[in-house]
Amino acid sequence: MVVVACPCALVVAMPITYACGVSSLARWGVLVKSSRQLELLAAVRTLAMDKTGTLTEGRFRFHRMVVGEAAGSTERVVKLAASVESLSSHPVAAAFLDFAQSLGAEPEAVEGFATIEGEGVSGSVGGVQVHVGSEVLARRVLAT
Image (cartoon, rainbow, N blue to C red):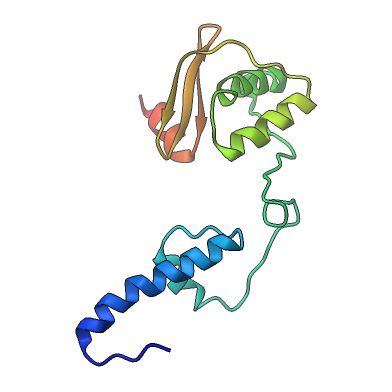
């Protein structure tokens, strides 16, 4: 319980309260993006979870990949993406690499690797420019 004697104390107490909440959750292995997400949790009435291990084990898993005809063969697309993802430190990249290995795809050498903060990664594999990431990255690349 927080007892507030003046409005200034409330202004000081709230950030400390959020920090305590985020740090307590972190000790349990729960990562919270910001205090705003803690506020949003108060309104949650139903929570649906998947059973792939992302929440229970803290590991992402890739189950399948759908490749459009214009992109070429699935094997080639997986190999190109795995090549670029092999240089990424993102947890989803590690899951994709496990998936690629299960298909027998071995990464090739990458030139000009770059991490695009908050969007994905890119690099050149055998002279082919490869971008792997979010929809925002895809829209930006396709617009150029």
